[in-house]
Amino acid sequence: MNSQLITERLAGKGIRPTSNRILVYDALARQESPQSLKDMENLLLSMDKSSIFRVLTLFLKHDVVHAFEDGRGVMNYELCNEQGECHHHDNHVHFYCEVCGRSFCMEDVPIPSFCLPSGFRQHSVSFVIKGECPNCSSKKTKTTL
Ligand SMILES: [Zn+2]
Ligand SMILES: [Zn+2]
Ligand SMILES: [Zn+2]
Image (tube, rainbow, N blue to C red; front, side, top):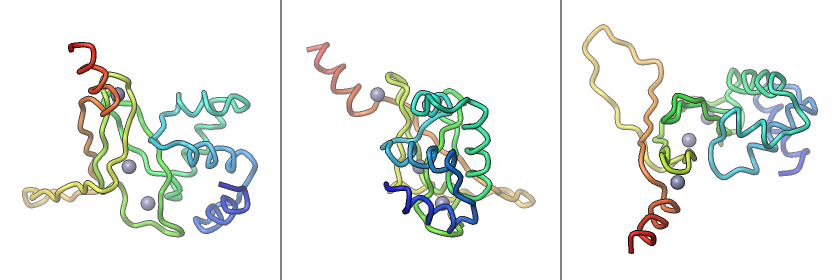
């Protein structure tokens, strides 16, 4: 993704595009799967951890990214696909591979709505399925054969 496009996306979310913010956005845009802070550190070796964290926190607040806890209780970040304001906050399922430790975004698998007892008001819901990704499960089949 070129920086012109990133600048437009950030502006659409109400964020001033500084060079650090563009770098973090670009790093996330290059990845196919959601990334943890640790992953981000490895992608952005020129930036220190606290700067990355500050940008991610700002991104979260402005719906530039969405976050969810993976199978280890570690936050994972992914870019919001919507331009401008976003209202859909984490309405899909995520998958955590217990073998390789990668997280996957199941954009097409919606989280079912739950019937809560009266008096309970839902703010957000996080849904993570743990198991083996296609890559790891096919490896396993090969070694057992
Ligand atoms: Zn969104
Ligand atoms: Zn895996
Ligand atoms: Zn996702």
